[in-house]
Every structure is written in structure tokens, then in C-alpha cells.
Image 1 (cartoon, rainbow, N blue to C red):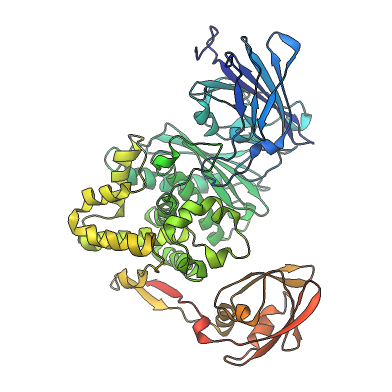
Image 2 (cartoon, one colour):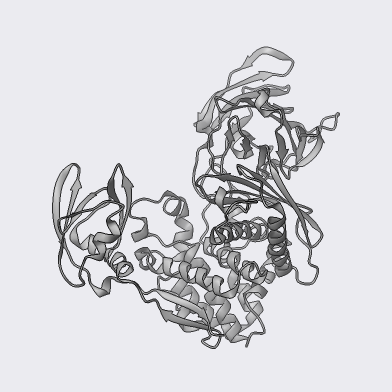
Amino acid sequence: MPALLSSGLPAIQYTVWPADLHGHRFHVKLHIEKPDPKGQALQMPAWIPGSYLIRDFSKQIESIAAYSVGKPNHKLALERIDNDQWRLPMTEGPVEVLTTVYAFDSSVRAAYLDTERAFINPSSLCLTIRGQESLPCALILIPPKDSSANDWTVQTELRSVKVDSQGYGFYLAKNYDDLLDHPIAIGQFQIAHWQSNGVPHSMAIQGCIHEVDLKRLAVDLQAICKCTIDLFEPKTQLAPFKSYLFLVNAVLAGYGGLEHRNSTALLCRRDQIPQLNNPLDERSYQEFLGLCSHEYFHAWLVKRIQPKAFQPYQLDRRNHTRLLWLFEGFTSYYDDLQLVRSKRIDLQTYLLQLADHWNGVLRGPGRHKQNLADSSFDAWTKYYQSDENTPNAVVSYYGKGALLALGLDLQIRKFTKSRLSLDDLMRLLWQRHGLTFEGLAEDGLDALILALLGKGFSKTWAIFKSHYIFGVEDIPIQKWLDPKMILVKHKTHSKLEKIKLQLGLRQTEVSGWLKVTHVLDGGAAQAAGLAPGDLLASINGQRISASRWDKVLSSLTQSKDFVLCFYRDDLEHECMAVLKDDQIPDQYVLTPTE
């Protein structure tokens, strides 16, 4: 089957135009030069790589129709196979499939369109042609006709072939997977440029009201990106891409990112971005830099070093692996570590953030029920579909996985007397599985650790696997940190902090009421009989509200019963509760020794 037409264009072409900015609708035309004569199957992806949840993108297709090319009035009958699959009738000539897709998902995982901006993940708009996924394809971007979009430009790392000054026109992808790995942002941007190790990098930002401090962003991100390139390639200092693009959508409230081969899509709050003549909360900015560091690290670990289970991605079903503690957890360890290595934060700030992450894991009762391997495997149904019982049943492969990486780093340094570290394991992973694109088997880390550290480390690694990866024991970071460098102390809680930990309750304000969202195992709230959905009314006769919550809790006495009044299903209930010391999870403080 020819991949290219005589004109030099691919035999598969997607034409996308933002047709209805007010109704949030894209029109997509798919040209198939050589459909399967026995009946070409078409399918919309069910999920997007990097976000492990079946999202059923086909649900946003409002209309779909197929026509023979050259016969615009000859509509072809489409057979519906499933909610996300169609089949063309037997035909010999080229075919065009027209779809209208609703796009109003402001996350980094789907597509969005309004009068302010457009965002495209091709997995949300572009049907796959079954059996032709390996062929090159073109993406043609058409500008919207709405006058409000006259000044919009296109930002993407997809290879441009023939585009105008605003970026509209022809783009080329090596295959369908390559197309899906290139998000596209359209609108008005403030753009920072820099080079790390000679590689051009850019950050294109939408949504900020004030002028962004592009110079500060460029300086900070240049250092972070260089640090990560040097980690994987300390000798050559070469990046695995020719250029890299951060796409940032700044909003009132939101946070997240999605990795791609040579770009990333980020969502953050506006107040996390440095803006000229505007106050900046440094802690929030550091959190944003950590997000940038995390997704950038994924350009190596996830996008090139991959689980074998992801090669190739099967986008019509769940792709299970027990290794997300490695791919996401180790990335979470390095994201903040790269900030201190690049001198964006100091050691004291890093240790404060590390302690916060560690304490957060220790506050989750689910860590004693679910191990890291199962957490990874069940990400599709548990981590990504959290509910009121998630803290009691699930451990985060991000959070505990990062602690596992820290623990392994400390143990490797101890075993080799600081001759080697986790960095060396990451470089070995890169050499054997990143540069080669050979997927990592579920037990593939065993051979790498043996090759790097020898049989003498086997017992330590066996304990890591049995206790902390396939077991549910807490990782004893407090025992492994060198007290000559970092001091570990149990955290001293204020009276209010102690009461909140003992209560084991999470709540939110709804119409003036405090509504229970989570009740943690072992806490006073669960022992008293509270449940998610309950509306808290009073404690010891004192009315509870969001503004009075801390004051009322502070009036409680340790080991003394208190009366809690609440409503469930509009019926009043009353229960007795008591605060006990054994309801407080271990919490720690980390400080530099010197």
C-alpha cells in the first residue's frame, strides 16, 4: 500500500478546523486514499497515553458521515460496530469521513474550543484507520472564520511542512502514534525561549492577565532542563530531541500535566506564573517548576524508556503494567531533586517538600492494604477513579514510588560507599531501554540492578521487592538517611494539628454546611460512626461552620468524650467520639545537619 500519493502528500490526511467557537465544535475530515476494499474499520481511541483511564473520546462525536471522493453526493453507509468503532462498506476508491466533535474539556487530556483558545489532542479528534496505523499521515489545520480568532497562532512540535505566518497549514506525522504524541495549542501566547545544551526550548503560555516574566522563566527552566539532559547523558550532554515545547494553560484553579516525546501540555493556576509588577508566591512558583521538571523528565522515562506492556499502545483497551511505581514514582522523586540540583531551590526547601510528601503517604491508611505493584496495575480502576474510600484502600504509586526511589538511592550509595547512586541506574535504563526503544519487562529491573551492583546487592533488592513493592510495609526512610547530613525528627504538632490527625476526617463546605468527604480508617470520626456525605452540625453544642471549624476543634480535650451532631439523608443523628494518641500517624521533619 503506497504511503504517499504522487503529489508527495500522505495517503492519510486529517483536516481539522475550529468550526464553531461558541458551540465548541471541531469539524474533522479524514481522507483515506486506500481503504480496505473488504470494508475499512475506523476507531476512536478510548484513552490517551500517560493518563490511565478509559475516557471514551467517541462520546463527543456528534455526527459522522462517509463519502466517496469525487462523488460528494454519494454518501456511504457506515456500519456501527461498537460505541467507538465503525466500518465502511466494500469500496475501491478513496474515501472521506467527516466528523463533528464537541470539545470543551479544559484538561490536558482531551480537546477544547471557545472564543479564547483552541487545544487539540489528536486522540480526541482523529479516528484511527485500523491496519494503517503505521503509515505516515498529514494534519491540515484550517483557521477559524470567527473574527475573534484573527490574531491566533499555532503552537506545536508536530513537523510543519507548509504553514503560513500564524502556523496554519500542513503538518506531517510519521504514523498515527506520532500524530497522537503532538498536542496543539491555538490562540494568543506569551512565549519564553532558551537553549539547554544547544537545544532550542520554548514555553508558550495562555491565560495570564499580566505580562509574564519571561526572562525569569527562561533562566529557571534552562537550568532545570540542562540538569536533566546531563543526568541521562553526562558525557555527550545530548538531548533525545531537536527541540522541546512546554504548552501552558494558566487558569483560576487547576493543576496537571501530560508528557509527550518532545513537548508537554501543562495546566496551572495563574498565580503560579511569575508576572511583572504582580506579587508571586514563591512556594506556588516552585510547585509549577516541579511540574515542569516532572513532565520534562518523562521525555526519557515513559516516552522512550517504556514498559514492554505499552509497546505498542492498545488504545481500545486498558494497558496494564505493574511498573508505574518506577515510571511515575521515580519521576516524582527526581522532579523536585532536579530543582535543588539546578539551584532553583535550596536544600532546606527541598527537605521541607520531601517531608510533606513523605508525611502525606504516611497519613493514608490505604498504604497498609495495597502494594505498589497492585497500585500500578489497578491505576485504571482505582487511582484514576477515586471515591470516598480511596484513602483507605489505595496507595499512590506517585507518592510511595518516590519514597521507594529515595530509599533505593540511599541504599545504593551506602552499598557502594557513594561510588554509585540511583542516577547510574537511570543511565543504565536509558542506555539499554531508552536509546534502543526496547520495552522494559515487568521483572526487567532485576537484571539491570544485578548488572550495576552485582550479586552482593541481591539481598537488599529482594527485601525492597518483597517488603515495599509487593508488600505493604512502610519504607524506613528515617533509618536510612545519614544523620551527619540530614536530621530526622518526629514532628511536633500544635494542639489543632493533633486533633485533626486524630479525627481522621476530610470535609468541604457546601451551602454553609461542612460536608464529610472522607472518613479515614482508625480515626475518631470513623469510630463514632460518621460517613461520607454527612453534614456536620455541632460539636458539644457548638455549631460548626467553615469559619468556626478550627475554633471549635481547639476547644476539645484529649481522651475525653465529645458529642457530635450531624445530618444524614436529612435525618438528625448524634454520636460520641473520643480523641486518642494511637490515632496519630507517624509524621516527620527533615532538616540539614549543617
